[in-house]
Length: 116
Image (cartoon, rainbow, N blue to C red; front, side):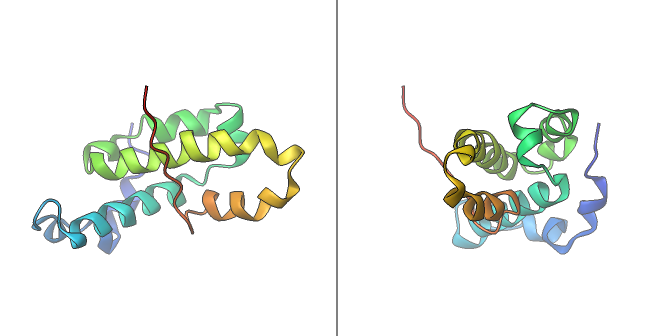
């Protein structure tokens, strides 16, 4: 189901923006802007992420992912790996509250590079 259909009206989702060289600085910036749009629209809370709420799953199964898979991957790494990893520590580390708030609003983007 598409819970994010309304964000397709935002300028960042305009089809004209897709006509770029695939790995150009401009294209990469566009994917990050779209990931920000997805995350802000979803409005996930720490509780949603920690407890895998319905809102959390709606975000992950939203059809908007098909519109820009790169942006969706950025958004899911941001939510699952970064926020999901840091959020359990907030109880004993109140100094993380400001950072987690910025991450939840996608004011900053958290990325992890994991290897096996």
